[in-house]
Image (cartoon, rainbow, N blue to C red; front, side, top):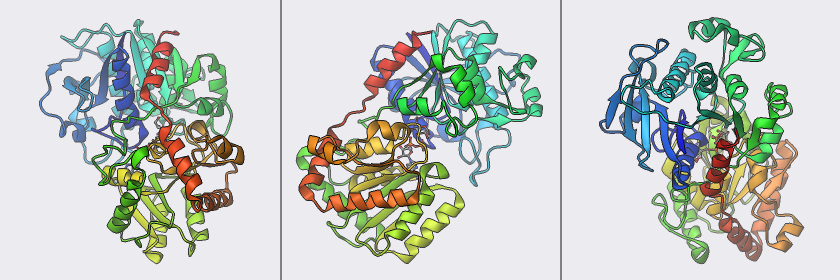
Length: 480
Ligand code: ADP
Ligand code: GLC
């Protein structure tokens, strides 16, 4: 089966969150399962600087494409799969991130940037990239940045099956009517049964309406978005399209996230060498200037510092546990007030709290390896990857019962402990108090080394391989 995988992020070339990891891990697993996969990504400056010369360039023929848009073929660094870059220096080669400036302002021309990307993808599907055979049977689209592809495929009468994956319904790619006109989209799409969304229009809605199949990244989130508030205004629309919607849990790339051979950590370990984990803890404490102690529980957190991730609850829990025997290490960036409040707390507690604002892959791995607990108190979480990585590192996750967190972590209830199936600590109530209570529960369990070790071993034995997800996607591609 020949698949074109369209995405706006790809590890290790460009990453703001889990989508980059999914694009890498899933495409590689699809290829291992026998699919012929090509990836297609905007040619951001940051990506071009990491790749050498292209293997080939192809002119694109499309009346709606800017004349300065081109296509070039490279290879994915990790998997070696073919990688097409839609190149346009004026749109994609800028200092800053893929969606926003260095100071987190969305690029003012995001609609045009991603509409041009979508049109270029459809040009490839239609065989209008000169010298490049199409023959694709499936186009797999990811999040709003690719949302126009299914409609354009349908409008052009192309034969491909279109699958649209929602990684986060909270980001919908919404723009105004003037932008709709500038993009020269079919006028009949300005309709409530097409793109129009409360007086504006949405790329995400376009992807949902026009694709053959819609997936999201966990079974629980696939149910949650059928109702408000997690439907983000689209619950009714999704109910209408429910027959084509399903949830496929993300996987983890254990060639990147494995404590037995992780190049980012100093002391490698697995179930048979679990005591080595403590050396990573001391190493992390030393690096961050925390008090050196093997016995005080260390709680880690890595992620976007946004409301979604429950950072306000985390701040309240950190305050509530101040002065108690617990240490924290937080790595992330996001809302300026969260960044400042976290930094203030850390300044007041230099030996027990380390807060690092920024993006640091190596430190993210070291936190997974060195922490005892990993906090993910998300308000909602389509899937979440860090809790899956934490399980593998024997770092027990403390999570809210939502989305993919609910699908991957098994609470340390008395019955689960007795059955030997507990892998973490789960709470439901959406409050800071519930998080604090659950952290206290985890900390008191930490004082029981035998029980803790058993939980670590159970957690480390869990497998969320991409193989299983790839198999489900291949089946879904065929369910047109
Ligand atoms: P989301 O996609 O909502 O941000 P996920 O848990 O799915 O959440 O994926 C987040 C990914 O991004 C993980 O691989 C995580 O390690 C990484 N990540 C997030 N913030 C940082 C950061 N500040 N430094 C390094 N890695 C980060
Ligand atoms: C989104 C979601 C996250 C998910 C990731 C990859 O960023 O917020 O929960 O794991 O996409 O699918």
